[in-house]
Length: 246
Ligand code: NAD
Image (cartoon, rainbow, N blue to C red; front, side, top):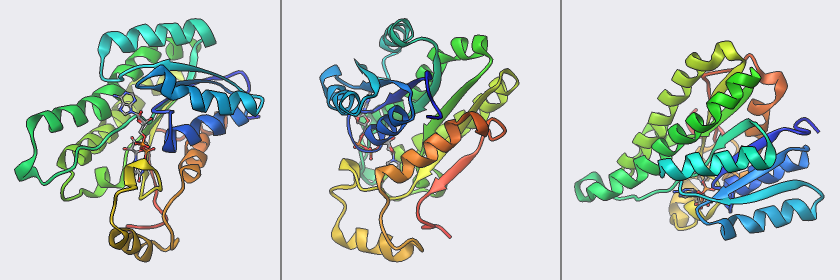
């Protein structure tokens, strides 16, 4: 029970990777604030946690909405106490070749994937600084590190998260707060559901692990970086991709 009594916020906790991260923290004793765009979307994850004997509460929030982030995070701290761990997992794609990309698709992806993490991090900073401890884990992507045709908005947002991660690590390191990123490879979730069988077969063939990733593969890495014992790791990006880019 590494996270007994710790308040953990997971954004995008309704499904996929975020749901798996929320379940894993709860199984280790954390009080988990499950954030999704709509409160009813987070309820399923909360129900699963409570059924397993854990503690969690659902919250509805668009992470790109500054006023809503401030309001909901104040509510979370009121309900569950100072946030000890923040996992910025909420994210979306609006893929197309740059030539055809609409400005609003660029703006929306940057707003949710990058500005969202800026806003939520700002919302937990004060409490973590006062507590002189904290863990922030940002879910980036291998395409933020390596680039991806047809995803300039998404890969730029995920690369931006890496800059945010390193800068926050530098700003808050002296207060006992770490900030790290995880760059998942291809993980089997709704986000990758529509990739062609051809593409998936190539991703499997290219990865030494010989398979696509599971949400649990990412959750395990998040818990490692968020653990109390990981206080000397900060500003890093851990690629969890089955060795895809070796
Ligand atoms: P998913 O689409 O299944 O889940 C995304 C989650 O983000 C959902 O809970 C959704 O409600 C939430 N979300 C979207 N917009 C939001 C907003 N404005 N405010 C609050 N919540 C919002 O995707 P997933 O595969 O589970 O992805 C989770 C994270 O991992 C994302 O940041 C994604 O970019 C990243 N990632 C996924 C993969 C992959 O292969 N699946 C690879 C690399 C990185």
